[in-house]
Image 1 (cartoon, rainbow, N blue to C red):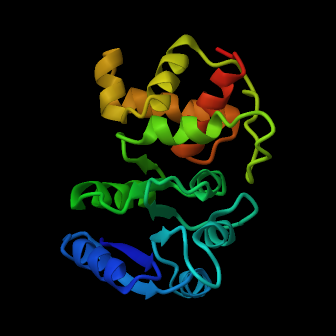
Image 2: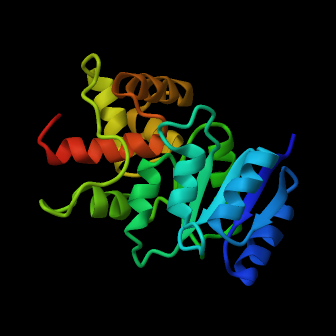
Length: 225
C-alpha cells in the first residue's frame, strides 16, 4: 500500500517540487497540499494522511504550532509529522522535534532521503539527515544556561537502569547512526538493535527516535552515563 502524504509549505515552487519527487515514488501518494499551518491542520484532520510533511515558517499558523496540534504530547491519536526546513538554523526546529515531529530534513535533501524519511515516519520510526543530526541536537539540547525553557516534555529518568548494551546502542543513536550502522558497529543483528531501541524508549518514555537522541545528549550534558 502507498504511504499517503500531506505537504504544507507557503511557497508554491517548494510544494510543487516536493510533490513531483514524492509522486515519482511507486509507494508514496500525495493526498493534499496546504499553504499555511492552519490549512494543514484542518486538511490533516480530515484526510488522516499517513505522514505530514511540514515547513516550519508558514503564515497564519507556523509549522511548530501545526506540529503541536497534530503530534503534541497531549494529542490522543497523533499523526506522524516530518519537518522540512533550511539549516540556518531556525530555533523552532528543536521545539518542533520535542513537540512530536518524527523527522527533520533540509529542503535540499535528495529524493532518496526524502523517501526514507516518509517511510520511517509512517512505520513509527524517525529519520534526521545523518549529516546534521549531531549538529542539530547539540545546538539545542546543549542550550546555554539562561537560554530559556524549550517547549515539550522534559527528559525522564529511566524507569529501570539501561543495560550496557542499551548504553552502546543509545550512544550510536546520539551520534546519528542508523539501525544498520549500529548493528554493524556492535556486531549484532538489525532485529537486536530494534529490540534494544524499543526497550530504551519504553524505559524513558520517549515517543520516537528523535526524542531518544535528544534525551541522550541532554543526559550526557548532565554527566549521566
